[in-house]
Image 1: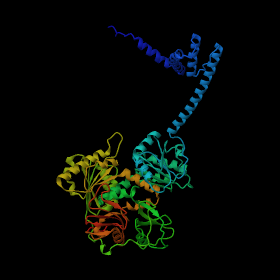
Image 2 (image 1 turned 90 degrees about the vertical axis):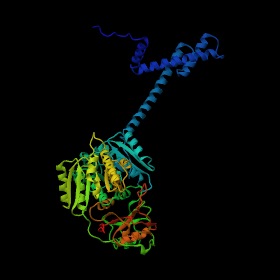
Image 3 (image 1 turned 30 degrees about the horizontal axis):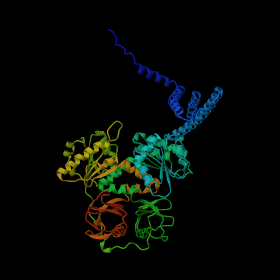
Image 4 (image 1 turned 30 degrees about the vertical axis):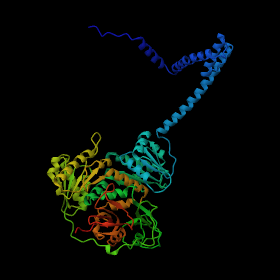
Length: 637
């Protein structure tokens, strides 16, 4: 069989092939073509100028000389006329000058290009003092960077240095998109592995004010956090006053991380904190808003200030002397914290006050406490111990055993946790064992099922439970966003509530804060974005190391914790009263009132107000709530 006929290339195709082949011969060929193109343009134009110039002699030799002069001046080849040797020498000098200038320009351009490429690679060393260093790149980086920009700890220019194993331009673009304008704060990115001492030196950790070691996106990468802390300990001596804040996801690496970080490091257990926050919100719907307000720098947060009053005055006297801030504790001279101490506690000379304020400069003290109407005060009713509770857990991830353990510590005896998930029976048995070890007061039941199916939620009757917890699966490479399944489950719960008309508090764990905005609307729903809250907590501790003990106690199952209590426990409802009256009533009952939540929530703060002025007067509704820091909630009436 004859083969296919071969087409003869056209003349145009042959020319293009020849031209392309010529260009591939290197720099000499490119320079030759450039000279030919220039001559093809300059010589005809110079000829027209010479023949149309009336000042040029009419002889052919004179006009050719004029053409040569125009061409030489245009192409910087001298343009001398006369004997051939003189013309050749002028061309030679022009070529030498052209070669020298072009070589010099090339050297300068190459040097600048190499320097810019090196800078874009993020390999230059940062020579700063008192800056903040962020090591690693994870889901917390937008939150941490934005909060460091918003932190109002001082008014001077601040530097935030980020070191991660990513391209510097990519990091800068991502931070510019998520953080936006940074004001007086400058964010500098450097490329390199934080576990590499040579790369770590690029951000000068020894001269930094604090270093944040971000957790990785998967628990199996916590070993890299430990290695980063070891590298940091080698780069920073014990004499350097550098604070270190780190976090791990798997508690199996917690001890190793604390050993690697040394005494200067604060290492947080992400899963444990997330479980505590979820259980807090299960017990008291709406508490996630309080945590959010106290953790970010956008509103009012914790600060430490010196008491300018006379030495030895009591905690109660100092608290009543703050008209626009809320005094909630004492930081003793040895660094220990007393949160919500007895009102008669004396403030010593080297003590500082822990306050909730807009910033550290807004706190001031008044010689005259804010007045209030004593007749508006009331007292929390006493009642019987709380009844057993039923909690429904929809979905499964690695934090489920911790959630069960925290529920066992905080729920009344006889309570039940009903788990509905596609989890293995052996895994749920481990949850049951964790609950029994924590308190032996919580019964764990397991019903295999897929919470993303409407038939599963309809068969459960969620309205028969005191609270519902919705968990998404653990994120894994190659799988969909865990929040996708969570949102589907929430849609089924919302549809069932719309049909039955019965409401039940739902606490949902999300991995992406943006998904909170698109979640089905449900009154009383709480969303815990654990990754964002951990980022906020790390930033707060990096700015004030005393807050480690504050949040450790606030998230503990006992001690002084946050509570949302009915306003009727402190003031008479149905009438107006100042917040000073609420604060005084709470103080008489051994609590610190730090804000309130209105019964008619409005966007975007959902009716929550933290640290209102003592002189703030409002009408108190029976369904309003007061936010307090207290040792334990009063028994239910």
